[in-house]
Length: 143
Length: 76
Image (cartoon, rainbow over all chains, first blue to last red; front, side, top):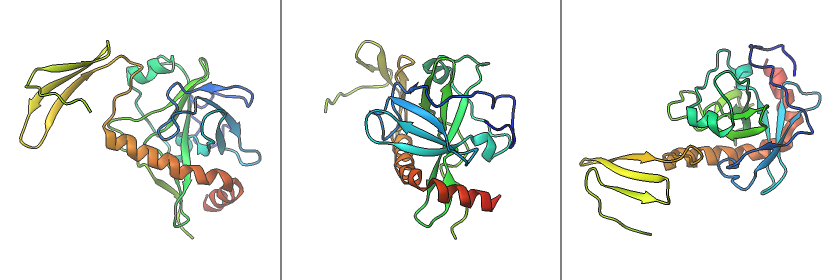
């Protein structure tokens, strides 16, 4: 992954195409999708593709939220960390899902990021109770 | 649906490890305390629904990689 935009000390977590990430609970709306891969969107860094290998057909475009907002910070609870086998110092891969709004605007979900522990290859979508970031942070206004 | 009448400080158990306790009963709401093992996620339902809807609407963007990438580049 390129270290260009807003590279912080934690952006190093690299996940290669061939590895499967397990989401023990799926994600909301896609609870049956337990196996996912994170793919580089070829030629379109820093975009990523989060693609389900089982369950409902699901595929998302995503961005590291720290590349969207400098200083982005989402506090994980102890239970969140335990679920992916991480401790406070484990470097994690963060992804925020991209949507195209009905009016054509491009938004990104900073409220409920996907977080993956590359050491255990376990992931989850975090639903923080007191997160102030928006569910639909507009990246590109409607044309 | 199972229906219970519980008073303040009374609880129900779900399975072995989940307890739902009534902490306070007010005019407009009931304050509940929930004890669950870490692998069980507990959320306000409306939050879960919001995220679910956001995920479902994010699905369509996956077919528009080139367009999204071009617009992001242009906006930078």
